[in-house]
Length: 151
Image (cartoon, rainbow, N blue to C red):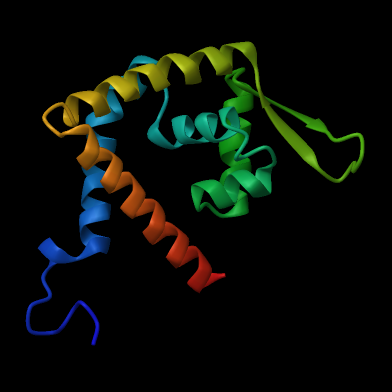
């Protein structure tokens, strides 16, 4: 028998609903941080993905953002036009176009990341460190299970 049943399933105990709601609240709470830098949430997410080498190509960035390739290309166009990202062909495989942050893009990602950390630390101020670590470990475990099942 599984954890959930028709008899007691509500949004307040749905992992999917709770994760989505936490994400929505965080995104809403962080919008002023991004607005200070003249970025949207998605633009920041793209910069951070490139910053941490998760989105080093358009296809990798699309996967990391859960975006389609066309929308990702338009996003990269905007980031490049703003002077935050550059594209260049890989020497080993000319079909691959690598994404790199410019010095300005790196500064914005770093500065905004510091403000995001501050916001999360404020939200978690009354949580014991052990609870935060446990929540992170549990969500990482859930992510791993879901990645295995959907692969």
